[in-house]
Length: 119
Image (cartoon, rainbow, N blue to C red; front, side):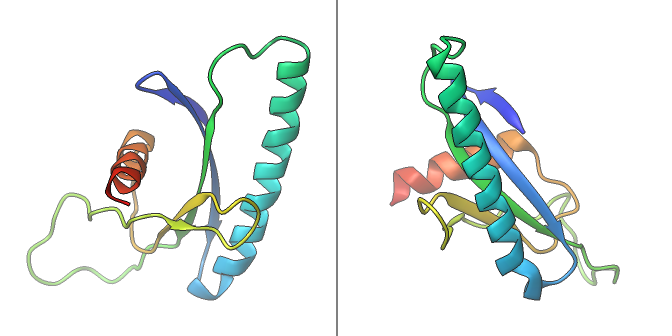
């Protein structure tokens, strides 16, 4: 997903998996996406088609939400986890969403920016 939030270009690679045991495979696939994005970015810059700021890359591993109904009070959407640095490539930030049926790109970017300011 390529987007601009608050004037900053972002590239988000999303990998969907069914179980936490597949997170390592998902991160490898996201790294492949990062390498492909770097190649495309290099070509766009070389031919003068990208003249703006550098983009920020981050990954999202989305695990299949549980089917069991929550007990007790519910919130419209659970708080997003803080991103962790990927073990692959350049150590870009990556979210692992374990039970988030919905997450907005703007919400992920906001969490990313806030976590960078706090670190």
